[in-house]
Image 1 (spheres, rainbow, N blue to C red):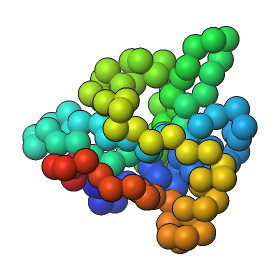
Image 2 (tube, helix red, strand yellow):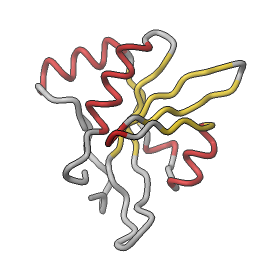
Image 3 (cartoon, rainbow, N blue to C red):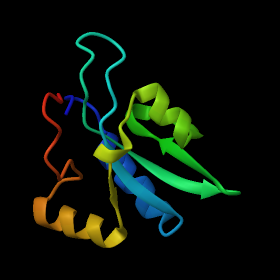
Image 4 (cartoon, helix red, strand yellow):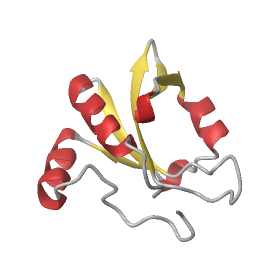
Length: 110
């Protein structure tokens, strides 16, 4: 995980505001600059008119785009993403006392 970001907290809070219309996702985009490694990140996915969208409000941004484009730009492997329900969120936050990440990151991730 990269230091200094607030993605896990921002996504968790956004998810709580939008539940049950959304899902919380933790995944691993690839840096768009050297060292070109994967890093832990969090966002929210939701559906509008049959299209799945991503909303990422980390680091005082508000990015919203189709999920396919977000995954393409970030070089995100969907198989490495973890989706969480509200029950999952409550459990992990209570057990760990933080917003994430809660799972082991892929080998080589920052």
